[in-house]
Length: 210
Image (cartoon, rainbow, N blue to C red; front, side, top):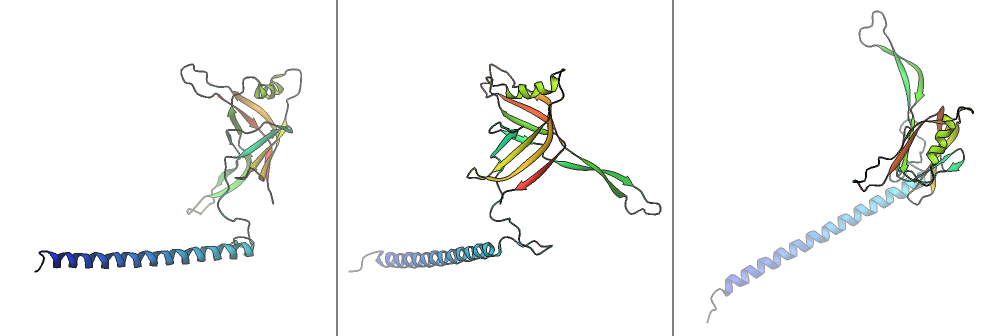
């Protein structure tokens, strides 16, 4: 005696089994492709390491640019040889040349730019406010004291890796405080206080580590 619907159930089961088999094959193929891609990437990294870095497109020599770009949130600052610990923010490591337009008679296509002496931007140092120390105020006294010369100090900004190891440093010469900004005091905010100084300096150099 035939069972009603048995044929339809077998057909549906067969189709489901076939679909499951196709899905399994696709998953296996995807896994194989992913494995092959990973192998290619590892081989490329090994080749790059053996070459000593990425080849410069202009000179053909190897550079030291390997892996991901370095982080910009770990650094230490020394002012006058004294470590001021970790800062929240540093900005102003910038140089810009002045450009003087030089029109040429009969040349209507462009105006030639004469490069004039450049200037270094002001250095801004910002950190959490430590009311018990007043270290920034001490630096400011070196400018406000009418009985002494203006205090200028060398500044070293040490850039650290993800493992907090030195990877490079900026050295700024003859820096002096020209601006101080204390914390914004607000009894309703509940926020951490910050203070910052701005310094003028002659120039900076950068020395990579390694």
